Length: 152
Image (cartoon, rainbow, N blue to C red):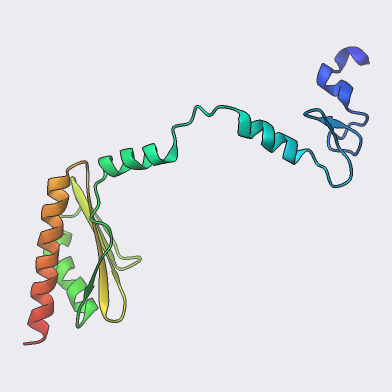
């Protein structure tokens, strides 16, 4: 019977590893001590082979450069959204209307979210900062062109 038990099993007094009196990472499990703190301390000291998050974030930004969220006040956000849909949807690979308008093209994409008096625009490209900047300027011009035509 002892032959089937591992050396780790010898620290347990009962089949339940978290029962009071059992040992985890050299600490006795007592009421209120599940061994979690000891595990966290051990895990904390272990060197990580995972790439740090800031480096991953910088790499991700380089892969998909983004304009960030650009807010623009407009007279009628729905009219502006429909104008952009008319101009760009026929060329898009994917059109998503679930939260405003998202259009995806082969090398870039944009998303517009609406509120009562403004739109929120975000443009991204596939590793091409110049294209992202060009498309952002183009979309802002189209938005401004439609917005100013509403008032005249």
